[in-house]
Each structure stands twice: as structure tokens, then as C-alpha cells.
Amino acid sequence: MKSPQNSARLRQRFTFTDENHKIATDHLKKYPSDRQQSAVISLLDLAQRQHGGWLSPEVIDYVAEYLHMPSIRVWEVASFYSLFRLKQPGKYHIQICGTPPCWLCGSNDLLRIAKKWLGIDKGERTTDGKFSLEEVECLGACTAGPVIKINDDYHENMTEEKLISLLQSFADDTR
Ligand code: FES
Image (cartoon, rainbow, N blue to C red; front, top):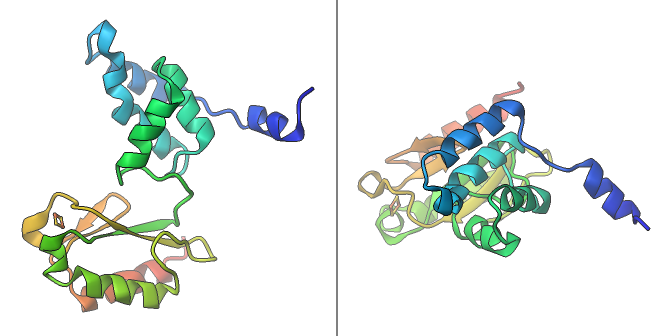
């Protein structure tokens, strides 16, 4: 017998849109037929974008099925990279690099300011769902530290003033 939870899970079953299915198929064409699983990062990114910026268990299972992979292996990829989020982020997801080159340039102070300004800790989301905050390892722009990534945008050579100004502009955004 189906439990209410299972029924809800079936109702919410994730599938790629037609457009994303085509994009996923194009990704698969880049790899030999016996190496299709190499597309896992591309497909997780595609799925995350379709699913509002995060990967639920159902989405991860879907990608695993799509690539004929055990779910646990897709979980391993999704949980390793800070590119992927396993819980729903805020509308503005703020990632602050905490690796030494950025840390030496003051990223820890930026993290402290962001926590205070937003009233949340690392790994949390504001109650209005507008912001979430995360400290991550190297964002790959080490010569321009401290570096912050907000959604898909990099903000380099950040200062306290620039950070507060950015946060305020996002807070003022009522779209
Ligand atoms: S150490 Fe911060 S971007 Fe590389």
C-alpha cells in the first residue's frame, strides 16, 4: 500500500523539461557510449537550475536513473562540490571563499559582517527566504581575493563597504 509520503513523492517526481532533455542529450553526445556517466556534473547543474537552485533526493535519483548510475555515486558528486546545494537556498545565495589566499585578504571579516547583517549563521537561510549564506573553499579566482559568489556572479576584491552595499541592494529588490 502506498503511504501518503510515497504518494507525495510520486506526485512530485522530477523530470527534465523538453528543452532540458535536449540539452542533456547534447551533453551525453560529448562522451563515448561507455562513458556517459562523465556527464554527471553537467546534468546535476542542469537539474539544479530547473529545480530552483538545489538538488532534492528526488532530483538526484532522477539524474542517477538518467545516467544509469547508482544513486549513491551521484550523491557523492553532489555533496562534494560547493557548486551543488542539497537544501533550498535563498533567492540570493552568498558563498564566501574561506581558503587561505582569500582569508589572508580578510574574507573572515566579510563572513562575520554578512552573518551579522543577515542575522543568520553559515549554512542557514533567512526566514523570508531571500538570502542564504555559505563559506566555501577556493572559488578559483584567488588573485582577486577576497572573493564572494552570489548566485552565478563573482564579486572580486571585496571590501566591507562593497559587501554591505550589495546586500542592501538585494534586500531592496522587491521583484
Ligand atoms: S582562495 Fe579564494 S578564490 Fe581561491
